Image (cartoon, rainbow, N blue to C red; front, top):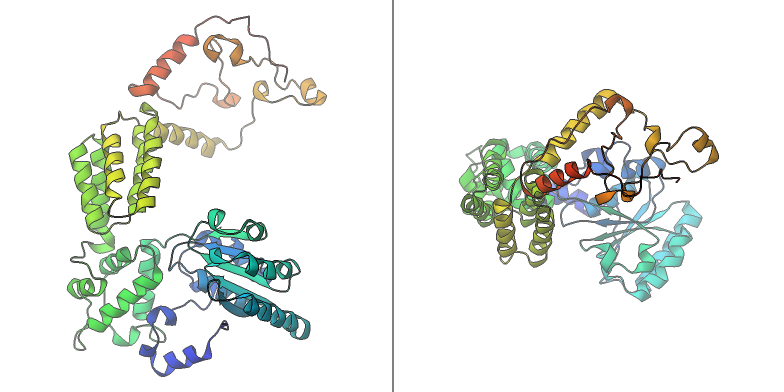
Length: 454
């Protein structure tokens, strides 16, 4: 039912015979500094780093896909805060076991002055009876709860429990994260595979990492099997051996995963060129070689804003719907919404104004710093603000034809009043909207355009 943060049986087993314990278990990080990925949570100044420093663990839920470090992070928090670590499964632990854990935690706190971190796997399966036993003790600080789930807590975790915890989302590990982890495992003579002295280039490790789809455990298992398949007299991992280990026909990644990025680039540039045939071909190349559906969908959402933009405002809607549908149905049926979305994006009118307009504005923000907001667009909510001329001269757009102030002056900071970041669009909806706006700016006011007094 329970497990301590450091299992002496596992420790002794891998020290005596490393092969008796899986590589993924041996390579578990010993501190947050060794942890791969999740820099938004464990980096300097981030929430888990701060928790480790303060030695106080609040109740948390780690939400993320398999193999991204949910259990490991819980163990590390227990070690950093010197808490007793107890593991329960929401599907296996009944009310009786929970009461026993809570009572032991209470005694430990009273007699040893030591806290307890209760780690509950599959916490989305907690039923009301389990929750009712645990909630009062969480509120009293008898123990800290850290739950793990692969399901969206907003939909799957009981509301009463959800209101008492903070949800932290863990992300799939990047190819770079996994390559660094595999390299460390390959060279670590104490816990890893360093004793075999086998070399592997970064491109090959990137290929293994790619097949793991963000899962560190899967990547390490594949590497361990690959090294086991290398004959004793050889000291180089080949593509053929690695392919056997990961169970795919070919590993199409050149150094640093170049072939992967080449195909992605071809996919994006085909859609940008409105070449629907090529775009669908490269889509099929990615999907048939095992590319992650969510990765493809994310690229399409980015493309919808970067390359179609407001030439067709429906593009971002279609891309988001495509991503949702593909994630919901999964492979192989996901090829249908993905193909539909790719065809729409390839055939849509193109505009990169979202990209260029932001880039133009960003240059001034970085170069000029925090310029003052013009008085005309400040909101005068107090007498003092009115006396300071806040809002004076502001004209209410809805008082004018088409909701546009004729000849409207710039609302940019005074030093940038002559700047124009949006280049006049030339095609699609945004070109028509631009032309209509220019016409309206020359139109008369409906009623003289009184100043807005708010």
